[in-house]
Image (cartoon, rainbow, N blue to C red; front, side, top):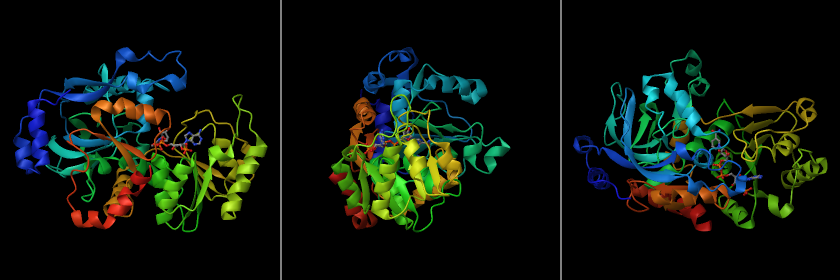
Length: 450
Ligand code: NAP
C-alpha cells in the first residue's frame, strides 16, 4: 500500500532535511498507512496452541484516519520503528486483548476516548520528525528529529511525581494506548520525546528505546538493582533485546556479566562485544521445572555450580524476564543478600520457587516496568555519547511486520528487528558522520555476526 501524495510530500521534505517551518506548512493527509490489529480478530486464536498462534495472521496494514491532536501532544512522522515483544503479545491477543486497555482508556476522559477504536495502531519505539505540536508544548517544534520513549503519562496524580512509573494512569504507548509507532503518523505526548542521536540512522535510532530504558532502570537506576562495579550479573537471553543492552550496561558499569543464550552463534555475538562468561542453556540442557510445576533441585544446583565455575561466586544480581521456566533457578542461584530484578514472564507468569532460599538467604525480588522520563533520557544520552551500541540485526519494511513478529514469536531472531516506516531505504538519517565513522565497526558488529 503506497503512501498518499500528501504523505509522500512530507516524507520527501524529511529526506531533503527541509526546515521545520516548511514541514509545518505542508498539509497533513486525511488518512495514512498503519499496522493495526482489528477488534473483529480478537478470538481467532481461541483454542489454538500458543506455538501455532501466528501473529502475521492478525497484523494488518490498513488505511486509517490521522489521529486528532490534543494539548501537550505532538504528531510525528516515524521514519523507522522496531519490533518489541509487546507487538507479539498484542497480535496474539494474549494474555489479554489490548482492546480492553483501549476501552478502559476510553472511559477515562474525553481525550482518552479518542483511543477507543475498533482498530489498534501498535508500536512502542520510533525515530522520526515532529510534524505538529498541540497547545502547551514548548520544548519541541516541527522539524525536530526525535526518538520516542513509550511511557505515556499525564502526571495528574501525586504518586507519579516521585517516579512517573508509579502514576496509576501510566500506560505503555502503542500497547496500552492507540496511535503507536507503526504508522505514517503517530501521536505522542511531548514528554515522550528525546533528541535523536545524530550518529545513528533512522532504524538504528528507533531500535534502542524500549528495551534499553527498561534494562537501564532494572540494572542502573536507584529504582532497580543499582549495580556496583564488580557485581556479577546473570543475564537471561543475552542476545535478546533486553539482554543485549543489559550486557552492555554491565560491561560499561564495571560489572561482570554471565550471559545465558541458546546457541553457539549467539555466544559468538556476545564474545565479540566483550562478554567472557556465557552459558549455552540448550547445549547444557537445563530443565528447572516440569509441566506440573515440580522444581528439579539437582538442576538448580547444576546451574549454580556452572556459574561458580565461571566466575567463582554466585550472582549479585539476576536479570530476569523469561519467567516461569527460569524463575526458580534465578532465585536459587542469586547470592545471599542479592537481587533478582524482573520485568516480564515470557514463558508464563505464574512462578514457582522455593521461598526458603529467598528469606533465609535474605534475597530480594524487585519488580520493574519500563522507565520514567529521566531514566529514558539518561539511557538515550549514553547512546548519544557513543557508550551503547544498537543491537539491530535485521530491518523489515512496514508491510512485512507480520514476518518479523513471527520470527520473534518463534525466538528465531537475535538483537532487535527494525521496521522502516517513512524511510525509503536502510542507512538514512545520519547527521554526525565524524562520530559515525569513529563508531562504525562497533555499531555494525552485532548485525554482521547475526
Ligand atoms: P527477545 O528479544 O525475544 O529476547 C528474549 C530472550 O529470552 C531471547 O533472546 C531468548 O534467548 C530468551 N529466552 C526465550 N525463551 C527462553 C526460555 N525458555 N528460557 C530462557 N531464556 C529464554 O525479547 P525482549 O525484547 O528481550 O523481551 C523479553 C520479555 O520482556 C518479553 O516478554 C517482553 O514483553 C518483556 N519486556 C518487558 C518490559 C517491561 O517494561 N516490563 C520491557 C521490555 C520487554 P536464548 O534463546 O538465546 O536463551
